[in-house]
Each structure stands twice: as structure tokens, then as C-alpha cells.
Image 1 (cartoon, rainbow, N blue to C red):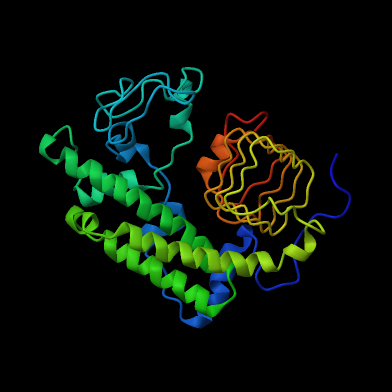
Image 2: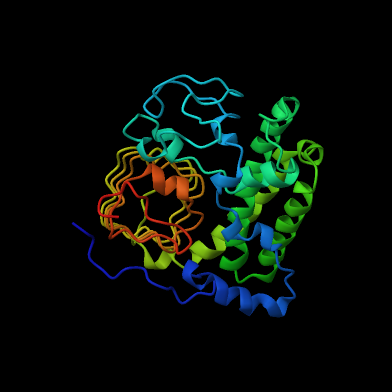
Length: 315
């Protein structure tokens, strides 16, 4: 039963911006002389294009037999389902065949960038000597592309010029760091860069969530906090507007019909979380892998640049 009261909607606070308004806000902030990111690293380009990748996710990473995979595969070896043309022979049957883990992975476009740009379109199969370097580069670039994904949102969700500029500068720094050579990427201090990005994302989150908190539950539970263990918790029909759920464990949590406007979901574990009818359209830092790992339906609303997973009921 949903809690009584209106949905959070749009708070009267400059810290709120719907993802559906990203383009409008980009135009608004142009008066601050914000240098645009390269088209190569806009959010639309931070999506996997498997047709131009050398199946790096199916080779570079390993996995163990589990609920997500039916077999063991060591890192650096091709999956047994990989065809000679780098396509997956069971792509349309991954979940029924037990390869659920494959369906919740996203390289954020790193695969095609490494394959076509950093390694000039020559595959590890054609030049085996590049295999180790290519796989290591892919692992690093995947992290960098994910940072770019979050920073693009942070830059347009904030109305603080300082926060916007920090996000912009980090985006430009990462774009330059990816550069033209694999060696340049592998020389990066990813831990330091990740810490700087995380600090900016948290600052923007604090700003945005402040505009929502008064519109959420009168008293959000103290346990609704970063890194909280909310596995299996019933949060159905709650107004969780402005909640800080960064890194929270929401595995199998019941969020049906809940309003997560302005809630920070950075790194939250949504495996098998029930999102039927939930509103995530204005939630912060949601990714496609998070949605793919959860369950929902056609009534679930998600950010404009994400999609309802095909395996969701009626989606």
C-alpha cells in the first residue's frame, strides 16, 4: 500500500534537474563558458557497440560458477560461447542458459574505443602479442568511461558553477588521459582519479538531494544511509526523495511504487530489487547495469537516457 501524499515531483530548489531536461540545462549553462566535452565522450557515445568491439568483455574478464554464470572462465580466455567473428552464439538466450551476469554488464562504450581507437582496429586474435596489453587497457578504460558517464550527469544536475566547473575539468582531464596510446592509459593513477571523481559526485549529490529531502518522508529511517544493508527490506510505496542510498545493498528489496526522485543510487546494489511502478526518473547516478540486475515493469519510470530492460514483465 503506497504511503499517502503526493509524489515528490519537482522541488522548488535549483538543485533539481530532471534527466529529461539535460539538453535544456546544457544550453542554460553555456553562459558560464563551459567547454563542451568531445562528441566522442558524450553520453550517447558511452554505450556499448558490440559490433565494433573484439569481444573484450567476453575475454578479458573471468567469472566463476554461480547464480550468474553456469561455468568457470579464467580471465584472459575467450568464453566458450564466443564465435570467430566475436559475436555471442547464445546472445538471445543468455538468461535461460544461466549467463545472467553477461546481461547486467556494461562497458560504457570502452570496448569499441579500445578496439578501434587505441588498437587501430587490429584484434588480439590477429595480433596475439597485443592480447595482455589490450585486455589490461580495456579494464582501465572501462573504469574511465564509467566516470565520464557519472560526471556528465553531475555537470548538468548541479546549479553551482563551481561544481559544474569541477565536473567539466574532470571530464576533460579523463578525455585527455585516455589519449591516443594504451601506454598512456596504463600509466594513470586510477585510484587517485577515482577519488577526485567520487568527491565531486558526492558534492553534487548533497546539493541536489537538499532540494528533495523536505518532500520525502517526514523522517527517513536512519538505516537509509550510504552502504546500508537493506537486503530484502520492504520499502514499498515510500517517498524516498533525497535519500542517500550510495553503495547501499538493496538486493531483493521491495521498492514497488516508491518515489526515488533525487535519491543517490551511486553504486547501489539493486540485484533482484523489485521496482514495479517505482519512479527513478529523477534519481541520481542510475546506470543501465543496475536496472538490468533489478526487476520491474512497464510502469517503472527510469531516467530518459536509460531503457527498460527487455526481461522485465511487459517492458
